[in-house]
Image 1 (cartoon, rainbow, N blue to C red):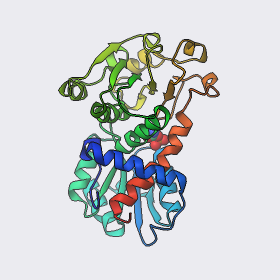
Image 2: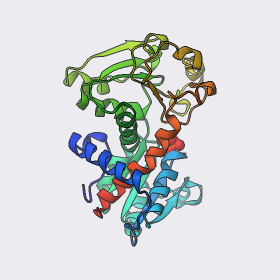
Image 3: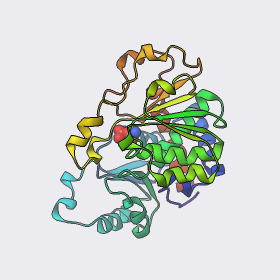
Image 4: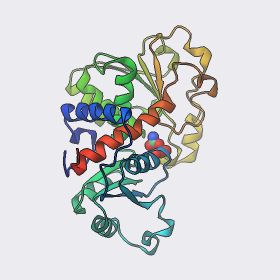
Length: 302
Ligand code: CP
């Protein structure tokens, strides 16, 4: 993986993805090691983030590397009209690896074409979020003991949810069954469903959350992505489509775990937070170990 960019989850083979998860396990056991001394990672966030940016910061800091970058563009020369291409060329002169989040689909692939250092896509529009995907896979494997033959329910905004797109694509390598719960306006895009069909796997589309709770091994809740709607009235229609509450989990499997890439708005009621089936905060912590595995693999120090 040395010097390779990660733009789509499919840029890494199934074996390479599993290799990252295995390495992340070793970082979970020993997260502080000075193996990135002398390396500079640039975090360029053109769109808001809490978990992704700060967990990359933590991952690099715990390994002795340095982080440069910005959390928004208000203090950068983007405000003076500097292009994405020029920004990436400049920052690739200052760093060994660029982690980039951007609101436009395809921006990360474009950045990788003009950069002299590898690019990690930290989310590009409604397209892909491959590092979230790897930490989701890590969380599923850790809680279920396997990634194979699971019933995975995806709930909420399957149209604009980039984390859903990446994770569905990855799980098609593991013979999972896909239960897709969304309002009719927010169904999983056909281009992503094609990946399921190509592997001849099952998927079922639902509009009612209750229908999947008794059968799921994983319920992957998502936020309705207000910022992706061009018409606010359309957002208002679907914003409260699904709210998972503690009393709805009666009759679910003992081994069920509830995941969410976060941030949540109201789609998981806080009365679930103390239920042992709630795993979303631990899931976000797992992101540090997975990102340590990714950064060290791409920089070739491990
Ligand atoms: N899951 C995720 O991408 O969270 P942030 O937007 O806070 O980075």
